[in-house]
Amino acid sequence: MTVVSTKEFNSDQEKYFDLAINERVYIKRGENVFLLINKNGDDSDFYHSENVYDEILSPDEEFRRTLSAEEFRNQLSAMLEDVDKKYANK
Image 1: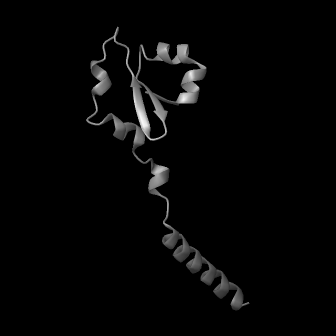
Image 2: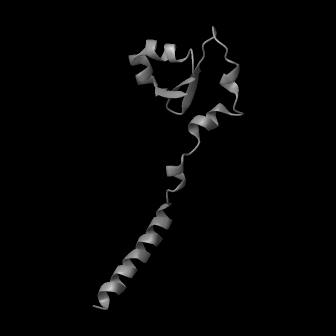
Image 3: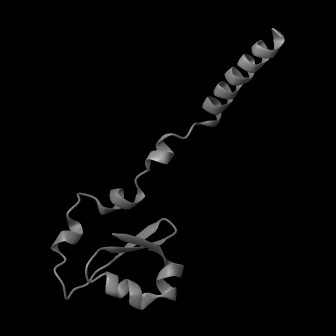
């Protein structure tokens, strides 16, 4: 599976058409995702997942570890309090 922007696709269309012969090629433009389909080949595996958008747009592990502004502020405050306590005793 390959996901490219419209700019990447337009700069080297031949490359991505050739890739589409053997694998799924998605073209992402803003929030929209388009699938490049090779009708000469067997495209039965193109739709093997229940929702192809989940495969592309689902949050990755890095996103899952992100903090909200409130969580960040709370953790930072706790860390600063620890630093204050450490250096206040010296």
